[in-house]
Length: 478
Image (cartoon, rainbow, N blue to C red; front, side):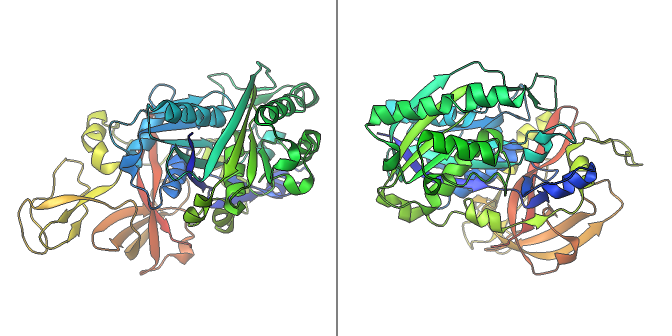
């Protein structure tokens, strides 16, 4: 039977205390903080980050499919999962799919991946879930919604967690929704959704899968389930029959409600501490519930090098002003730059470069081993080695997974930026190669020549309906 082979996660670098949001609107209170994606991040870039975490030590070309789950897909008509698959350097033969429009999309994607693996139509499937839901300013959703992502590899070999059973309930309960042309999530009266849906349906699904597997609540080491707030989450766990020690911490006070990604991120956190023989219960929520029983194997000890949830929680910077969030999300209009408008994005140019630029490929000389990074969007390619002058003796060489050091940098305070100043760097990669990149997730004061950086897939700009993605560098913090 198929199960989970690897896991990964991503939490944005920036955290916004809820007290800062409350203060901006003259409201009291605000406990904990939410993870806030930078202006150049979205569900695709966060899925790539989580996917890279899950692929540590694994050849991406061995992955047969990518299922991307989100309720906030950057594109309504263009396959988001294929963009992520290309950036992750999966092969052209991958069977990619988008799962969307429901908070349960993450577990639906996982169950679909398990079905594909068990049927033999794919041997290794990556499942990613990421969300960037927006709540209207000054409302409860704005205080609750955080950003983040999780990723899993599903297959039959080297399984770290077997899937012992699953149980699904589908209910068209409209307690939360967002129409196709709306920006902010809407909610019906809270008590209705809680008492008629959230406090009943997950209990029924959990009981169903436990009966199917011949288990009771005492057989589980941890229960991982969706929660819109901490109080409701605790109450649901108690109603399911779990003790407080069995309930996995839901990340609501440290990351926030990450939508479709939340139950899978909670599962990653549980797997980080799990040991062989532990049983885990995973329950999602959204137009019903998926309940899944997992049993951890000895293979779990072989993938302890992931950043996962724990290490990402430790890598953070606190935002001290609410206005930055408004600027990053485009909630308030900003004065346009006093410069000529950008030229329209060339889709033909993006196509010519997509197999080299999106996964960030350069070349390596077969004769002397010198690496060279060419990012010329005129489609020119390296012909002569800069070191030994061998002609046309190159092999593909990927830079996205390499770290490097800053050779030089500059801060541009004149160019329009949603996070001024623009920090431009020249990076010398470990193992050879040099390239010019923007730096993100940085404090301008921390920038210095020689600092270690890593690559991160980000959105460069949005223009005429096109999300233009490429790689930036960011300080390596662990």
